[in-house]
Length: 142
Picture (cartoon, rainbow, N blue to C red):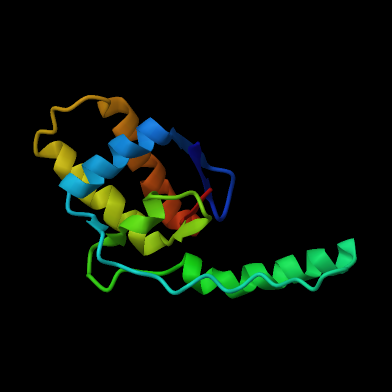
């Protein structure tokens, strides 16, 4: 399992395998970024009619994706925090530009304060990715 992150505008891409995401979550947690209390609404039921044609299924899937968009963009009620669930599954969560800015700013501050853990280069690459994603509509986590 991995986490593929694509900016919503442009072609920027970042990937973290399950171990890499564990590292990123730990640093975001230590930097006070992740809100584990944040919750999101239930996913809408995917109830495409039985016997639908391929064309009808495709149309239904597009409509379903639009229904899911507000859920995928769910925000934390805590200022300067990002819902932890966005980095706990690869279900197409959307990290909006404001959240990208929170991540890059707070992680940069955390690293400058003297982070001495492992995988510094990987973490810095993620910070750069988030900084760029601010102007590219954020990113989707698949």
